[in-house]
Amino acid sequence: MGKTIKIIYGSSTGNTRRAAEAIAAKLGGEVINVADAGPDDFKADLLILGTSTWGCGELQDDWQNALPMLESADLSGTPVALFGLGDSVGFSDTFVNGMAEIADKAVAAGGRLIGKWSSETYSHTGSTAEENGFFVGLALDEDNEPGKTDGRINQWCARLADEL
Image 1 (spheres, one colour):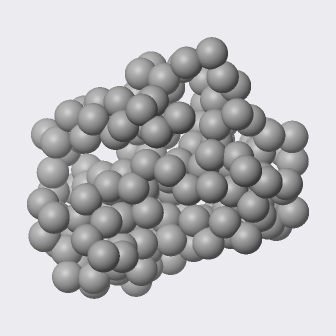
Image 2 (image 1 turned 135 degrees about the horizontal axis):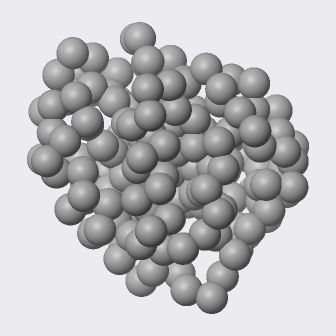
C-alpha cells in the first residue's frame, strides 16, 4: 500500500492477536499490542484498532488503560479501521460492543472511520457497534464461526485498500 500502517490490538486469549497478524499479513504494517503501546504508536497513515469484547459488552482490559492515549492522539483526518471479536451466540445482545467504544474515541480524536462491515450474516441480537445494518468495522466470531474468519479478513482488507 505504500503507507505507514499500524495495527494496535488488545487480546486476552490470543484470538485478537492472531486476527491482527492476519491483517498485517494482507496489508503489511506494524502489529502492536496495546499493552505495550505508547502515544507515538497512534500516528500512522492508516490506523487499525482491534479489540475483543468481554462479559456483557466490556472492552478488553488492556484497552481500558490505553484509552487516554487514544483520546489525546491527534487523528485529524487519519483513516481509522476497526476490527472486533466477540461471541454472537453466548453474548448475542452485546456482540462486539468493545469495538464501538474504541470507534467513539477515535472519531472524537479526529479519526475518519473506514471499513464498515455488513451485519447481515451474523446471528447476534444487538450491538452498540452496529448502525443501519453495518458494524463500524470487521466483526469476527472465533467462538461460533472460526471457519469464516480468514475469508472475512481477506474481503475486509481488500475493501480497506479500495477505500484508501
